[in-house]
Length: 79
Image 1 (tube, helix red, strand yellow):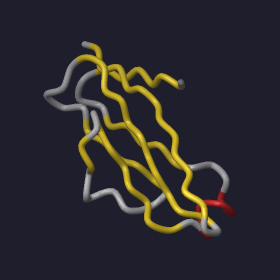
Image 2 (tube, helix red, strand yellow; image 1 turned 180 degrees about the vertical axis):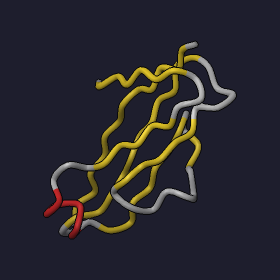
Image 3 (cartoon, one colour; image 1 turned 60 degrees about the vertical axis):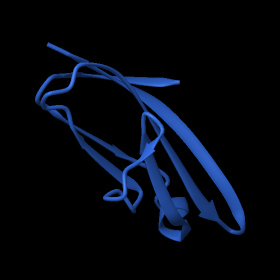
């Protein structure tokens, strides 16, 4: 699992790098600590770390060509 380390107060942006896949995929759903973030509905995930500390698991599910795909990564927020 990929780990992103960020200093508290800095933003995190994650983008699905395969533009062909991302452009054809639908129903993007992003979750932080298992809770759906309804503001995230595209292949790019933006997250603010202000006021946060510790480890957060981010996961995504998406539909593509009739199949459901998923993945996850961890964000570690430090001082």
